[in-house]
Length: 382
Image (cartoon, rainbow, N blue to C red; front, side, top):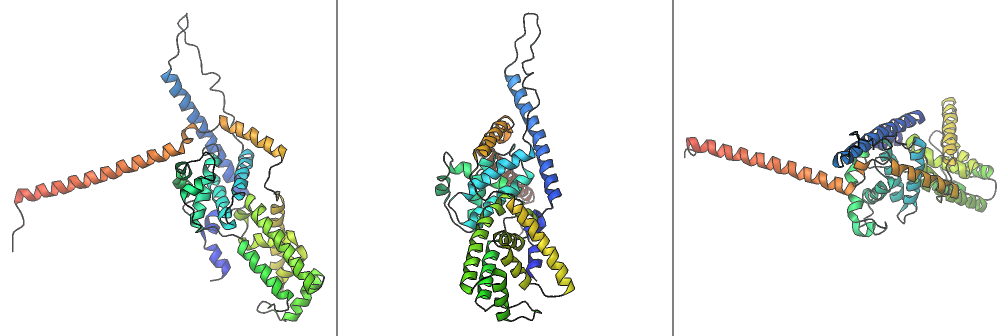
């Protein structure tokens, strides 16, 4: 099985790979469905308040309509506003002091969860902590719940884990995330080997290590020492892109990990990236067509990565917009989904009640069988 076959068999490819139109459609339908549910939930909440506080009749015996203003259409978040809010909380995850793979996985958990859920239903602040905590487990970075919760002000351990099952449902119980970081490290090592005159061409490509080295010097321009410095500089720039822009855009949904790290290298040093791609493709009409297609894909991915600012800190204008969205969200938050700790405890009670009912039925069945045996007496001895 080739690496490509292995990736196509992964849950990341089968469940979490989309085209741009598919992503737009999915997010739009999720937003519309959440808006309908928010309006219905707010209506139920108003009706409950009205029923508990019966209106007083006026002097003429009529009842004033006290809910006219409340029944106005709720101003729900748009898809664009949801994405801005989600990006802000994903950036907050990246700012935490955890290994890169843990933070990268947590961000993808957030982005995957909000493909089928809306911030209007579950606030990103509530999901952010549990996404990061779950990633510490799936990425084998043990952190106790108590010490983890201490990193989030005014957050209890119960509040961290309350939506964990909800998150795993949203992830469709697929926790594996394939990242481009290791691929970049391998590519940089190969480039360094080629610069040292020890590179090996792909099978079917009649090229010596010396020719690879000379080709690199020509593409990069300079001596061996200068080329090594150029590789290291491109490496650092590409790493920064993978730690920020690759996570905050839809790159993981639309491209494979190798395409993402090669696109990051294209941004960091295009001549170096083009040289590397050329060393991996044989010279034939079919291969040339594939190379053109690959480079087109890498340029498209690079354009997507460049569309996101490399910095995590929001500008004053962006903070103003986020505050506006936050106020708007306060008015269109589903009231039935705010207390996730209470919802989690209620689900546990229901589960315990169901378990007790099963045990009761089993006990009644066993008692019934014993009574039936008693009617005919015990077993005959042999």
